[in-house]
Image 1: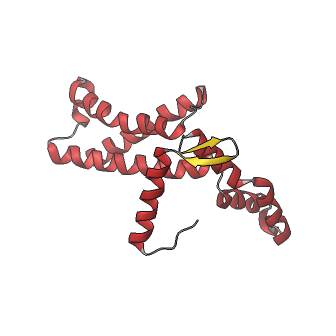
Image 2: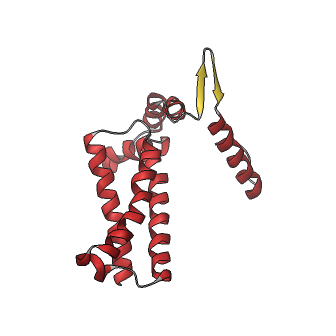
Image 3: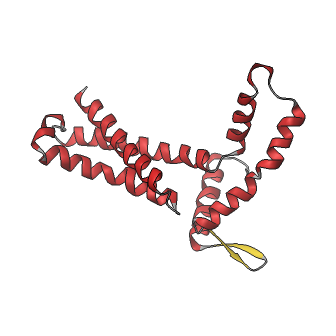
Length: 169
């Protein structure tokens, strides 16, 4: 139970730092900032429970307990980053869920649902995010992949091929 509390507490502390930073100023490149905050808190937290006398009783006892804490923390951090991207960029699915939920028990008509997606401009928001994260470069009248974008495009294509899935979104 001590290790579960340490792992959960460490992630909660990292989340609190993320929340505070975002309240002060949202970083321009949010995903790298999240990676630094969430994954950087793991070695800092383990060092704190090793060297701060008041926290030492909470610390892991040996290599395998450190591995358990680290595995939990990395999994939670990466899972949160994936969920955060859907929330921050307001995915079409999240837009629809919120819109239908706002209507209450009576729901929304098919025409209302279609019109809210037309206004949401999900493709434009995603394209802006790709440009902001430097995966796509706007060059005059065209968008081109950067080296980072080519890497991710190939990685996703490989994954889709490996899974036997069709290309597309």
